[in-house]
Image 1 (tube, helix red, strand yellow):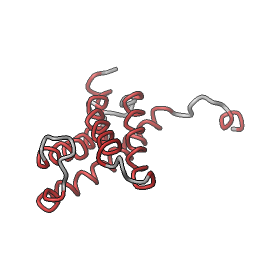
Image 2: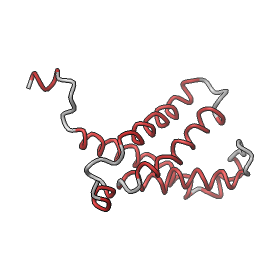
Image 3: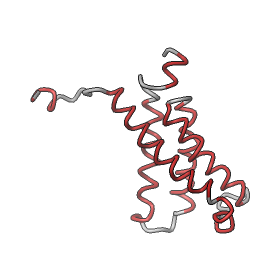
Image 4: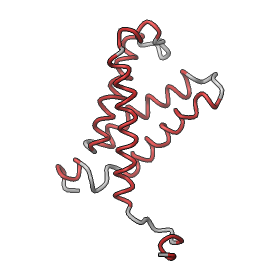
Length: 135
């Protein structure tokens, strides 16, 4: 037991990736659902920070957070699904919250870095990708 705790090799990488996907995807489903269910209330306050219109921006954020969050959670097209989340978090961190204090945008940075980690790890053994594509 002592050797396992001090060893640098993963105890169970696939289980770790699964837990990471469930947590990350679940949080995005939650945040996306809030935006989806309150769409009409949020739209007037949603800024056009990248010049494509407020409504288009909100639709893309809802897609990234809710739809892609679901895909990441079940592990379907995981690497492709995490790209819109990464872009959304990059825009949020570097543009939308660029002038905010770090403590106001640190969660966005955590999500940005976790999306990068999920992209690098992929969906893992416990995923729809594995069932469908047998990789």
